[in-house]
Length: 259
Image (cartoon, rainbow, N blue to C red; front, top):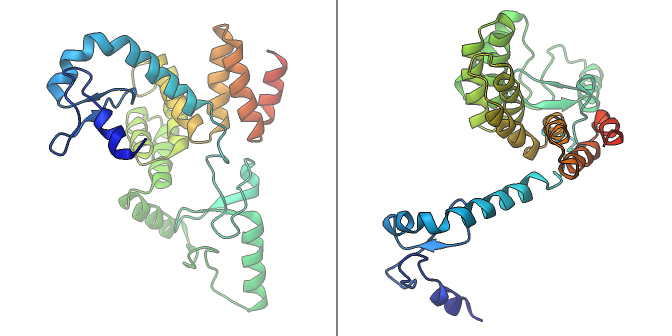
């Protein structure tokens, strides 16, 4: 069947009008299963479609949630493209460009500087000279915050959190999450559980942990697995633990033994 025939077969779920040159049907953004010619038709059809829409939206969410990520939220080293280890002792983040560099590339850069008798130390990635003192380091981080860098925003949020300013911490974790920082979602989940800087809300905590898990955060996925196990949904818990274990989270292996 041709693409033109497929398009002709598409009709508005409410009024039945078919798609044509001057009428474009839009998918229901929640379930992606029905189309409408206008907002009014979507509103009128809402009561009939609500149950099926909710069911299909949950199915789509699960498909996304239980998909094995290609790596972890840390991604690959931008120099050698080898996955960054979960162990924080095996990599470090540069304040100038906010890139996470593996220890191997940091060592290689240090060796090159020694061989070339290079006095001024530079970032292995962007070649920016390393900060001379804490004041210069702070200026670098502030520039990254101004640029809306996800890590810099999360770093500021973490500083506020350590100081006990949970309201400001929540604000900046939220900003970091909105621009794609997976760890910010993980931290927001904890803040919603503990009620720090925001009213406690378990549903919102789970949402943020799910977003973090989809983004490749094994600890967030482990948190969801624990919740699923506590509610007796062992099959879902096992799926989460297996994915987390495949990402290199050792505790997930132990959690599997308890299911």
